[in-house]
Image 1 (cartoon, rainbow, N blue to C red):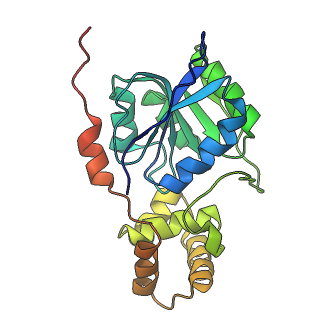
Image 2 (spheres, rainbow, N blue to C red):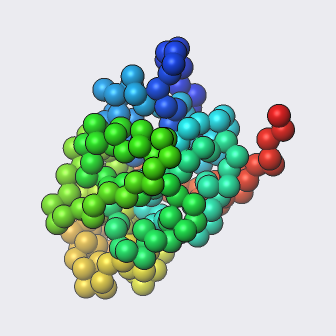
Length: 234
């Protein structure tokens, strides 16, 4: 999978707020960049990072938590402590109250829903940049992800099914996937049956093989090892 891709600066003065998009999946980041593209005069995507730390100072790190333990553990801690990150905002579908509380306690300054439109997302990022802490209302039952991409979308997988398959491909057991996604065991089994049907898999090993062949294997270990930077000297 590719590392960091530097994007050209807009050259605006005074410029829009600078944002680094962070996730382990290129296709997910491309979808987020696309919905923000019409608001480039307000939000400039300065970096798109997969498996690399943010290396240049940015106003906000928008951390898309696709297929990762939501708002928790060393992933978020490493992002928040990176001296290049001004403020960190979680971008997710999972609004379990404890997850929101934990993310804010770990230093996140925003917890934003993937159901936000591009304009709403730009508004929220600007509010965080002004110093506000912004938490989206929990999404309803119907989640719209217009403009987003995720691995397996072209094969008919929903974002949720893709997140489950990503975790399975990473070697997690059903119990671990249920814990990470906060799904009940029965609901998780329904997602697994549905995604197996869509990718024509008859066993877990076939599903894992399909996942590997379709880009579901990010290197989380490499990311964590490389997130930590010494303090900047001025």
